[in-house]
Length: 468
Picture: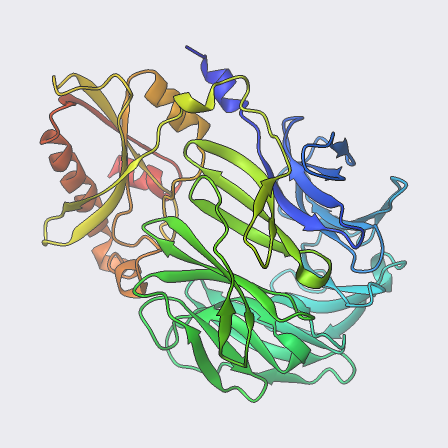
């Protein structure tokens, strides 16, 4: 039996990028916080490239050089600064404005410049900037003064235009295209009410954007948004959300995933027309959750972060055309045997109004039907979130100590359509609390469960639920 500290020291490798020479850069928290590491091949010895006390937030290779951009804040203040890491280890502070927030927007295709959004002019709004790779601080060119919370979704293939997203709320966004030469901004998604537009990628030859949206459905669908604002659905999720899409501009290859009961179903293919996709074999990946696709040169392969309840997070590299996947990183399980980790069961229980509430339910290995197993009801934060079966060291610790764990996705959770997400709005907030009570009633009927030993835990919105 392993102590709590051991479970909390299970490590993760994630957030990968493939360089022009085929090397892999990724984040790994072996030192306690995520730092930049690089790797020449699967199973090779990784090289640590940054050595900070603060966690690095992202890393991305430049398109033409073996240099990296990365972001980092200080003390969790969310005021991310952007840096360039050269191949010889030299680090350049690109933004050098520690009082401002910076949102990375991607390299220009020639690698000579990058874009970002920042509130350095006015802390209440985010403007759009373009900066040369050798420039720092005040050298950045302000190309658009924002009037809201803008993010940059990358350069067009010809390097002239930027795709922008403006967030009005968690469930309402707009998409624009900005001409970096003239400053003209074109609004592509005028709408009424709340509509999500996310995971925006430029399509081949820059003729359109591909994204996920619930503009025409209760769930998120993969869509093509032309530069004249025409929206065409490319793939629906069959009643489930399509979580996101990653498009390689040059090859027209893409990857997208469906969120089915919290698990990923990844699809890979290439465009056979503006809205037609020729599918490739589905990669065989462990764990059930995978994301953060990063394309390699010519899109012949891509890196992806893989996790699951019984699989700590690691980076795999997938051969695009065949689906053959190989694990490249080996983040430690802190010496805990993988076979001791417990996979949850997807369950549903009926709430006060007859609605079925989805949840993850995990029983410790020694549980039987004698009614002696205590249960922890673990409620996620948000409320706009979803408990998914990613690796969780604390959950595995509880299970190793003989506790069962119920993780409800009460009404108001994401992942089950926008109607479900809005069921707890405003005066209906306590309906979600009643869902927790219904989950406890369901537990009372489980033969293994001790009905007198059930406790609730949660943080943030989950903490509100516990107190309620």
